Length: 341
Ligand SMILES: CC(C)(COP(=O)(O)OP(=O)(O)OC[C@H]1O[C@@H](n2cnc3c(N)ncnc32)[C@H](O)[C@@H]1OP(=O)(O)O)[C@@H](O)C(=O)NCCC(=O)NCCS
Image 1 (tube, helix red, strand yellow):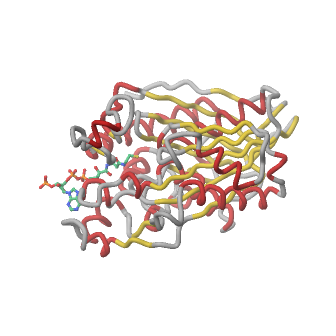
Image 2: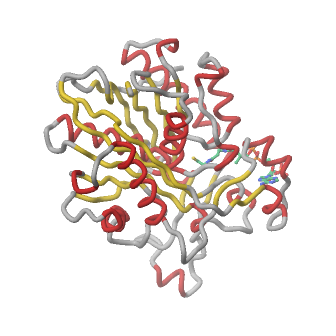
């Protein structure tokens, strides 16, 4: 049975239009064959079950969530023809922050040379970019901001146990960013979206320590060893497929658009098999669904903006196209953004 998720329209009076995108991934490539040397796995298993062939990994000490985020943001700002100083809000989405606090957004702000924008992080796991765009458009629509930078940056390699084959093969590092700007009386911009969570499922994907529940003292004393990403893959897979299908269906129904009106659907790149299972239930043409998980693995909240940037820069998406972004992640969190570019 289709679950109903409510969504919201944004008024055409004050629309948040994407004026620039950028992305940055580390140069370091980890292939499936590299992982075969670390854990009991095989290139064939990983490709068949996930569609991933390689992923990127930072060089610790030289690269970080902030360095990737700064570079992706600089590229998005250049693409928008916007100076860093013009940005009113910097919304960073990450589950692998630069430090415990302050926000990674502040490090990115420093790197961009902006010293006045409101800068903060949101932790919405793989749904971060979709949540961030919702927030950016709400601020713009409410008259609180004219130009917002949403930057999603993840160094998942810093949260992985490279002796755990259940998780280390799935994730990668990278960052993607977008500049959203006010356009009055416009048909373009974030038209409709839907953002949700179900906290009863938090244990399905979690990085438990250190935190309030599992304090650093317990980690240092050896009482708590749960410092890496833990995943119930089978349960996530099941929930992801049905939730993503319902989110797409509800969003299209709510916004009053049909699949053929869409130029493209960009799903969170969590597993090519999940995306294929969704495509069996919602009848997109193959060229309408963007997949680049083979190159980057699952980069959590960065996956959608990296894909969006690639689709735009390769000419697969153009001004005026209708694009649907669909996210699902730990929490569980999920949501959609329907943008007219
Ligand atoms: C993780 C995932 C790829 C596993 O695929 P699956 O088909 O569900 O595989 P299973 O978990 O059922 O495991 C099947 C077997 O492969 C084994 N296996 C797990 N990881 C492996 C790996 N990297 N290499 C080889 N074998 C592996 C399991 O131990 C299991 O062996 P068993 O049958 O002897 O017990 C899949 O469940 C998935 O994509 N889940 C969602 C992804 C996700 O959660 N992303 C993060 C959230 S955004």
